Each structure stands twice: as structure tokens, then as C-alpha cells.
Length: 106
Image 1 (cartoon, rainbow, N blue to C red):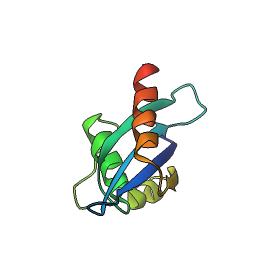
Image 2: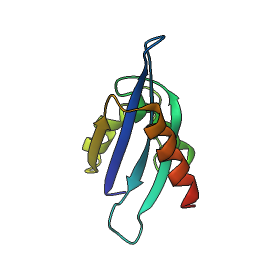
Image 3: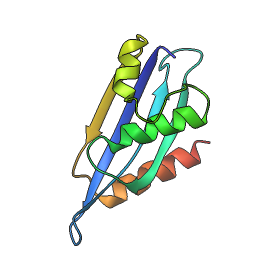
Image 4: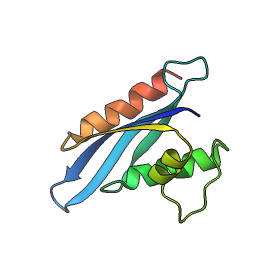
């Protein structure tokens, strides 16, 4: 893995104040080995999405990372370019559409 691009949208449930996110992450964008994965709609705030990316990369045997280690630090130590984009205050429908469109492209 040379690059990791994480693109996330967030939505805040105004009634309860809970934050949710959904998005995608791409390994080795623009290369022959490019792979795109879904971060499904789920509860979380701040950089929780990066923890979920770390969890999925570990499950898919792309990286081996102990629970206590941060994904940003791992990328830095292993010369992996991490590009992180979080679009905040989106509509819930935008997050659901992102997931639906991903599933249609499978």
C-alpha cells in the first residue's frame, strides 16, 4: 500500500445530537492495484471513521496493526500517503445515497 484516500460524509441527528458517518476509502488510488472499500453508515464522531478504516484494513489483511496504534502514525512510519477528507453537516440522505451508489457499482 502506497496511498490511502479516506472520504467521509457526516450527519448529525438533530433530535438526539448523535453524529453518523459513511464513506469510502481507496488503497493505491490511480494504480493497477487500486481497491475501493465502503465505510457503511454508522454512529461515530471526530476521527472515529479512521479507526473503522484501520479495523477493516486489518480484517482484510492489508495491514497488521495492534489496537493501540493510530492509523495516522502507521501511515507516517510506513511512508504511506494518507489523504483524509471529511465533509461535515451533510443530509442523512446523502450518506444513504453514498452507500446505495457504492453497492450498485459492485
